[in-house]
Length: 245
Image (tube, rainbow, N blue to C red; front, side, top):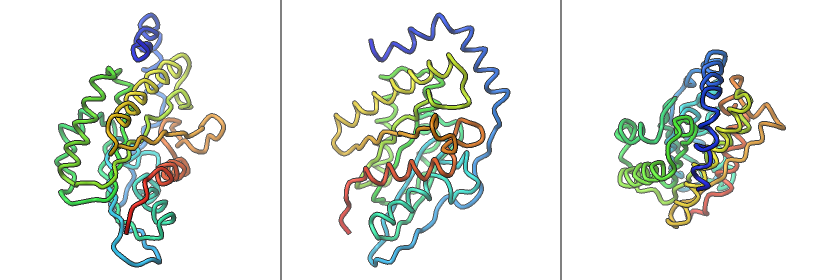
């Protein structure tokens, strides 16, 4: 019942929520995917082979909200891991603006290089929350996506980024912000449940407090800024299980 609460809340408010959604889309700046290469290497002083990192996800992985791919989550995560491990990090980002997990299953998996990686980051949720996906269907899609990615790149560690706290998105008005926050939280609980059932999955809560620090959000009030991606990367790197050289 707890996972159905957002739907029960949204139903009587539906005409207002739809109107607010239309107004929000009309007035919110449409930011592009960031330019630049979606792969690279962060150098470090220590020798040995670099850590290999693959990021798959929605618009922040594509660099929306950042001025350049070097400021987006793929490169920022590589930088954070290099700082913590002392090792070089080779990174690759496969993201698309507006993608849901179902889109990724149908269209994005085939774009992922078939090569082993050490760390796989999977980062979806906002577009699935907007689509009001049922939690059970969302869990099945997420697990199917991860299983396909594991077959393609055999990661040693899978990081499952928490669904962003949409109740803190500056671009969203009330009550739309409140309802979307409830839905995002329900999907995130679904991710936590998956991680509890599979010990090779590591759920990392996405705790960006844009209410008290607006600079963590991009100018559209919807996507993370470069500073937000840096903070997010730090959370992911701190939660990443220690890897042997």
